[in-house]
Image (cartoon, rainbow, N blue to C red; front, side, top):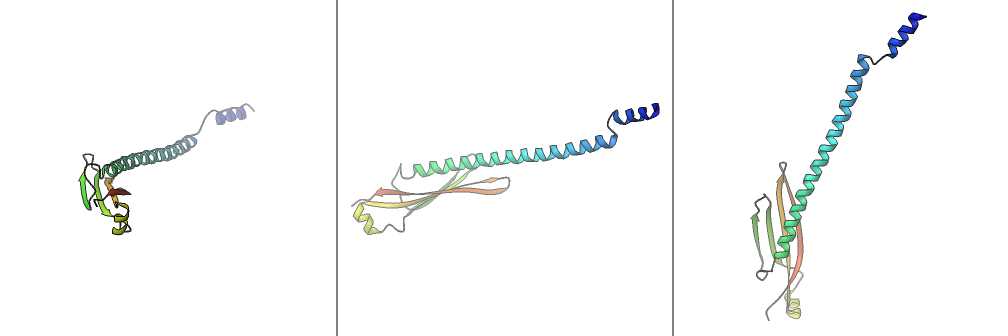
Length: 138
């Protein structure tokens, strides 16, 4: 009986090597998955920041259109120091007729702005458009 008690105490005294190895394997799998989720989250935050910056640039380009000089059909482009490329295209609204311009004294312009950048080897872009009226000379 004494021997059985000693065997029982040895079995209950600690973990076997196999149990410890299995526990470490499970821990490694869980930590690997958690790290993957964390890294993906950081990537999403980074891309979101880039999109937010690009939208701010596009909104700024739309807002300044026609402020310094009257709107005219054409296209211009540029590159900002932080690697964002932009393009602004101004055209007469095709649905706004010359007769409508004469009747109202206004011309309608469509303004399209595209901002693009490279992120992790992938080309990304945002585009905004607006309509802008402008007084026409009689």
